Length: 93
Image 1 (cartoon, rainbow, N blue to C red):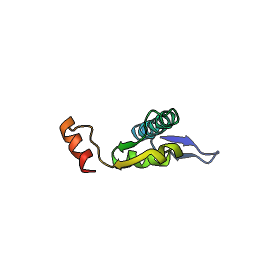
Image 2 (spheres, rainbow, N blue to C red):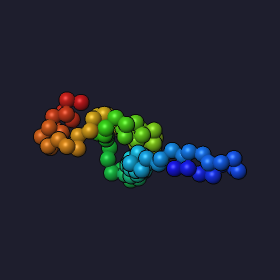
Image 3 (cartoon, rainbow, N blue to C red):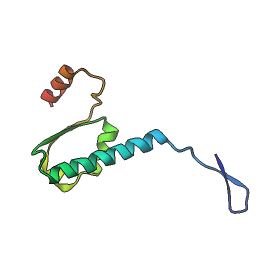
């Protein structure tokens, strides 16, 4: 898009990447939920599985209590795998 530029014409504006923005919001929501659950003692140990980029974003937002209970991370997108294959990946981790 284009926007007026302080009286000197128009400047180009980069397109908003709504998909990337939603992924970042999702990662923040997951981190907040993990924090809430950790503070309510809903889990004692945690294994987080997510695609590398999402995992990196979630990792930056871990609360200290979540970090203390973190047993491991798997940086793979497992969403399209059947349950038996997800179990194999988790056991191998």
